[in-house]
Image (cartoon, rainbow, N blue to C red; front, side, top):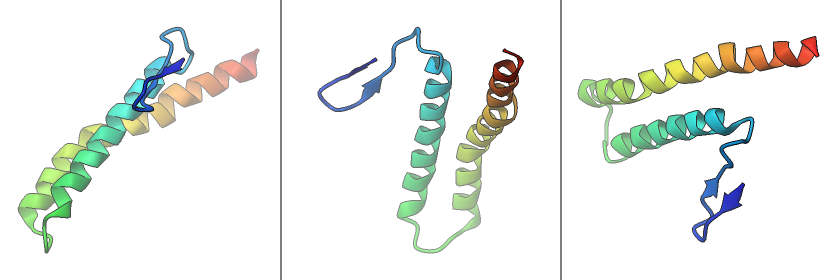
Length: 81
């Protein structure tokens, strides 16, 4: 696992959390994108709400999948050992 000069973490592909880490970075990017979309809007409106929902929905589904399936499977596997 290494860090470049910009302090951006670059995980080792052999790391157990490698795929999960990338999925969470993707989710974080979607949250950042939604926040960016919202920050210049003075009052909420249906167009902005729809845009934010469209940005966050896939990330939300992925996060729920990670929590409910991926991490739960890892926990189950650890308990079996």
